[in-house]
Length: 124
Length: 124
Image (cartoon, rainbow over all chains, first blue to last red):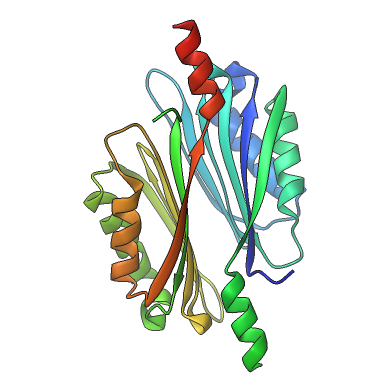
């Protein structure tokens, strides 16, 4: 891998709306996904919005996982950013999709900080 | 806009390394960028890593701003996610680049939750 980080943006469709609207459950699913991918959890902050929806982030030593939910549409926007080679962001992503009971999801991985890694390799 | 959210991934190059390694300064820059874009700040969590680097997230009512810094490369990976039409993520992004004293930056906007918005419009 030539990048400093891997960043997955995932669209989770057809999720369980009750889970998406339950801030404690969303937090627990997010922390579990981080742990299942082997990440070290540093901090988690979650908010329940009125009348519905949850936003939250898990800061991990390897970067972060973030989620924003639209229970009324059974939809969640997720992103998983990891640096280093130890944690695979796809493990967290698949875990999240499963635990949110997504009927389907679309996810794309972006490499972050490519240019700097190349520069760093050149000067080292 | 047909999406539920707008998500900018930005690569900030040639930043001020002293700022990138100062957790209090990074937090203040991130919160300022959120406020300058007109967002409502809910919570902020930041971590300083050893020997260097800062990770942090500002949760806003409109979604989030996240940053991960590599002071040794003068590089920061930023993402700004906003939902609704009131806050323009580019305002936060440009503000961040300026306050980090980035020599240059590359940023790309992704629309999030497009399909659901279309479905929601169809059934309403």
